[in-house]
Image 1 (cartoon, protein in one colour):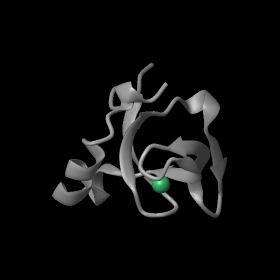
Image 2 (cartoon, rainbow, N blue to C red):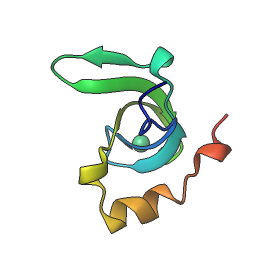
Image 3 (tube, rainbow, N blue to C red):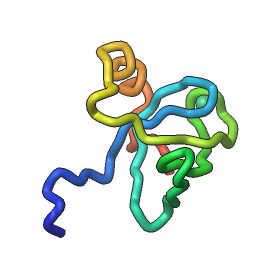
Length: 77
Ligand SMILES: [Zn+2]
């Protein structure tokens, strides 16, 4: 609750290099020491289940943002 910067909607990258917005709740994600934070999720870009990771704010580029905006989180059940 004190983590004011936390937001449940994030931009993620799938294993095939697609970017989209999704809701990322801490309870349904898991940590790997080697890989960072990953989870298995249905990718709206490629229409298949893929491992997905959060794109950190410092790694966001205008290209990633414009691609991710084509797949807003509200369209994902
Ligand atoms: Zn994908």
